[in-house]
Length: 243
Image (cartoon, rainbow, N blue to C red; front, top):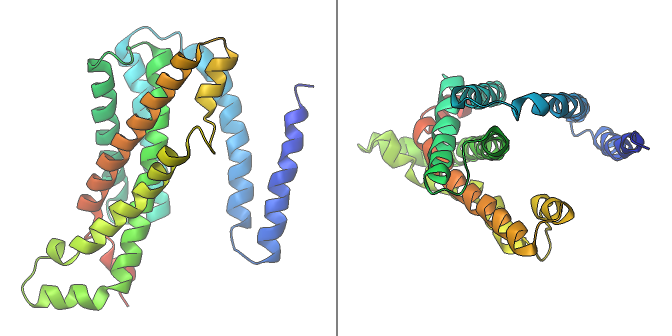
């Protein structure tokens, strides 16, 4: 019974078949990442038993740091911009620290491992997605408005001034999934945290309040990470779109 979940891989095989049929070029990545997700979650299941027993704050901070480093490494591999690892680490790390610290100071979460680590994981995962989305949109905007950017700089504008609209559009685009989540949660999208807490016996008010903390937390981290990414990386995308 406990291995029935493996049958769900048929859904991935269906996606692989369609990707192959339409020559989308993502078959290898999809297949590799689907297996990677399995082994990562399997490892997580065993690791959390030990991580949640950590008592010292520096030990918990070390776990979060390792998560940040791994996320930054993944981002640098996918985006391939100059000094990409350090830019990703700064954008992801600063946004995570800012939001986590705020939650702790406000007394919304405490410094226990079973609170900090899962929340940090949500923040870091969301920050990684935001970082990637901002960069992809920046590349697209820089490519589509390359002549305008070059014209503005030729007339004396700084590169940052010339790319101001591209930066603004990139931040806005990266925020769209978060905004959609706020609009659909509880009506179309039923959050897993809420369902899990209800199944565990928590009251509806407790489950909803905790889910709202997570949603509002993700709004904050999305804005901070998107703004930092755009400010750090606007000049790094131009070499990628040069002829």
